Amino acid sequence: MTRFRADRESAGRALVDDAGVVIEAAAAMAARFGSGSRLLAFGRDGGASDAAHVAVEFTHPVIVGKPALPALCLGGEPSLLPVLGRPEDIAVGIRPAGDDLAVARGLGMLTVALTVNAACPHADHVLAAGSDDALVAREIHVTMYHLLWELVHVFLEAGG
Image (cartoon, one colour):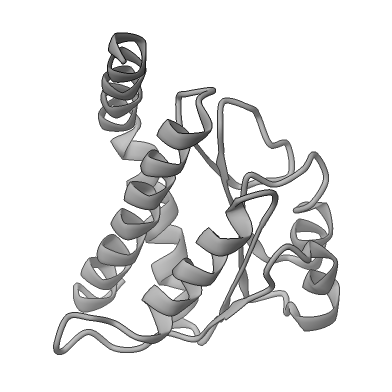
């Protein structure tokens, strides 16, 4: 239990250290949403359920006064990105495989990857959980995409 707690605290500190990366991703997403873009979320492994959560967060805001933003969940099927994605859209991959975001980026979509500790060469913004422990990484990812949601609305309210 002590190792788990230490890993969790370390990942939490890494998230604080990477706050600028999360802010940059949210600002880029807000700019796209402000131009009429949609968010297409997918996930690998357990990330597919997180992709559904991301889509729900953006389409059904729980805070009064926050606008619903267009978002689709692709589940565990990044192969749908070239079918449903448009150049102005946003692709969010949760624990994406190596080239899952390549097609989206090639289309001109903004690409955001929530990873464990890995680089994602086809992502414009990589948000790493800072933990190899699947449970800790998932906690950090949940925190990250809630931060993205909140910050996107902050940027949209501020006019971009």
